[in-house]
Structures are given as structure tokens and as C-alpha cells.
Length: 381
View: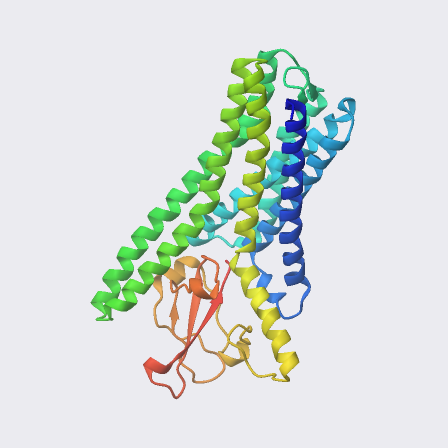
């Protein structure tokens, strides 16, 4: 098998894998968004941003198909589409980490910020991808015999790469690391505060341990986005720098053509894995399964995974993150004499609740403390 045949094989494999992966994830998301039993469970900022990013990734997959199909002289537009969708999805995934910091640490309303996440990501993607396309920089690369940058001048190519690719990668990496560090520091301080408070209130050590474990799970899940982005961006920049520094070398040419699609496949596959394991998606799929089971068996009672109606737990007063940090065991009941205690930092990762500020509602009417039924309600601010 010659080098050209290997090029085609690598590209075809990458296109097939990424298209199948993205399509499968988007189909699952569409099912959850359409089905009545799961629609309300998908009403979360992080899940919607993940959906937008996966749609952008699907656009990148479509651009990959076009790059493989169109003639060499017509590959400039698919190349721009690939760069635009890559940049857009990168900034959208960063916004998930940013939203966690703003909501959890600074008490910002994530639902109000959602339009800014999408708008600024679109603006940055257009700003970084349109100028090279307008300057006729995208096209068939005479040095590496692929659709990339058409100029044979290494210095000019590097200038446009710094503007459109390296700036995006550096910006995302720096901002994600800063955001993640702030969240880790906040959770670390919060853990110390919770431990001291629980010990002063003579609560069991098991409760503190559970809290610590849950916070650790939140940190690990949050770390996936910046860690994946960091690794992918470093790999992408390394391949580009290696290609530019060595010029038209046969071995480097083959290495770049092999590693480039592999990075593309890994990026979309890992982000698809993150999307398909999103708590809102998992809860939605469980709700659909439970709804079908109830329909088939003729049972219409309550279910562990079914949404809990607010009428059964009382009406809650909306509070900010700062107020949630300061409040413990206060009553926010407006319907009857039910005692509803609020603990702003209990997080049930096993039920698939996103790592955002939560309100823990304890039903205590006619029940002893050990028998209270716990209901988790995620609350975006």
C-alpha cells in the first residue's frame, strides 16, 4: 500500500468514526429533548451547551466529508468550515467550565448567561476563521499535498496559524486552567468549612466523608473538559509546529497526515463520551425507560427516577449562591407546616445531578430523621 493509499485510508477511517459517533450522540440527545417524560430533565444550561458543541462537531464531520469529496481547487470553503466549527466547539466546551465557576463560585445566573456563552463563542469563531478565508489562505497545500494553507511561504503560513489556530488553543488552555483552578480552590475551602461546621454540630463523621467523596467526584468530572482540551490543543500545536519547522519532508509529511486525523478522531470521540455520560442525558434516558415500563405494565405510580412534582415538597424561595453558602436548616415552606431544611452543598452524583449548586429538600412530616425521604433538585442560578 502506497503513501497516497494510506492517506485515503486514514481520512476515510476518521470521517466514518467521527460521523457515526456524533450522529449517535445527537440522536440520543434528540430523543431526550423530544420525549415528554425526559424533556424537563434536559432543561439545564450545561446540557444545552454540550448539545450546541456537539452540533458544531457534527459540522466539522461534514466538513471532513467535503474535504475528501471536493476537487483540490474547491477545498477552501470546506477547510474554512472545518476551522470555524472546530473553533466554535472549542469555545463552547470551555464555556461549560466557565459556567461552573460563575455559578458555583460567583453566584451568577447561568441561564441568563447562556446567550452570552453562545454569542461570544460564535463571535470568536468568526473572528478567528473568516480573515484567513477572506485572505485566500485556505486551499490546497503544495508542501504537504493536503487541503490546509495554500501559501508555500513558511513565515506567512505561520503568521496565519498563530492568528487562527494557536491563539485559539492558547486562549482556551489558559482560560480553562484558570477557571478549573478557581473551582478547585473553592471546593477545597468549602470542604474544610463543611468539615468544621459538621464537627461543631456533632454530626457523624460518615456524613462528612460522603460530602468529601461527592465533592471529589464533582472536581474529577469538571476536570475532564479542561484536561481534554489541554491535551488536544497541545497535540495540535505540536504537529503544526513540527510541520512548519521541517518544511516538505516525506517522513514529517506522512507523520502529520497520520497524526492529524487521529487527533481529530480522539477529540470528537472523547467529547462524545463526555456528552453521552452527561447526567441530564442519563437521567432523561432512565426516565424514558421508566415511562415505557410503566406504560407496558399498566403501573402509573411514582418512580425513583421520575421527576418529583413541586406540589409534593412545597414551594421553594429562589436564593442566590451566596445566600446558599450561608444558610443551613432554614424553612422555605409556603404551603403547609412541612419543615423543609435547605443544605446548599449536598450533591448526589449517583443520581446524575450536574455539579452545580443544589437545593437539598428533606421531607420530614410525620417522619423521624433517619427515615426522611431525600429529593435532589438541581437549581441553575
